[in-house]
Image (cartoon, rainbow, N blue to C red; front, side):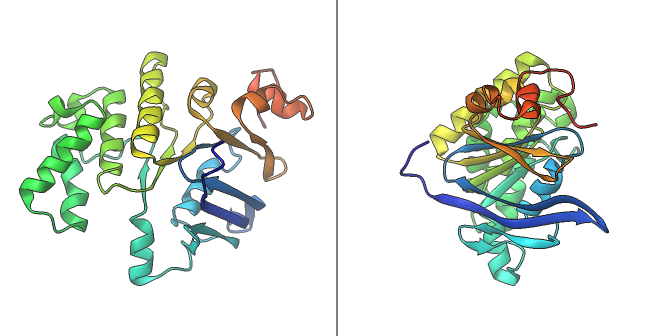
Length: 256
């Protein structure tokens, strides 16, 4: 990891759950500016719950999430809106508006949150589509595109406002291996060309090995972080059989 990087996200003593059920118990970690950071774990371990807390959708039972040193949960009014502008989010299904063209989908946040003239809005939106390889599909609606293309379009919309961070929930879900590999290449290209920080929730091991600078592994049984490190480090970690089994696809790797 580049020693010149600094911390952009701090999760401190975070406990999260639903009602009386605790899903994550007192975890802490940092995300460095410019890295591709992956949240990994078995089904039901709290990956998506953690992501929702990191983007301020859910309040924690205890603890805090700091974006550039500011608490996303405690912030209100204009401060919260300013913090929300620092990141974009893509969800598993893409969440594109089906009745709008790709261009209209990408124009939407620009029209809502900037004062750019319409011609400039259109130009910026086309540039974002160009970044994800979809400029020629600007006038298509989502249903006319493949699943992989819809994921790329969702990324274009998520980066329309030039956020410093992009959160991605299961970006490879439902994609074939070749399309998934293409999406991995796009993530690496955007991370490098835009100097953007990526926080990705996934359990797809090939994608993790392809893109991740660092990984944290959540474990359902303990509700804690089971391991942290690069994909190579975790693949070779024989100190914790569960971690080694998971990364090497051995029976019993995933919590039941």
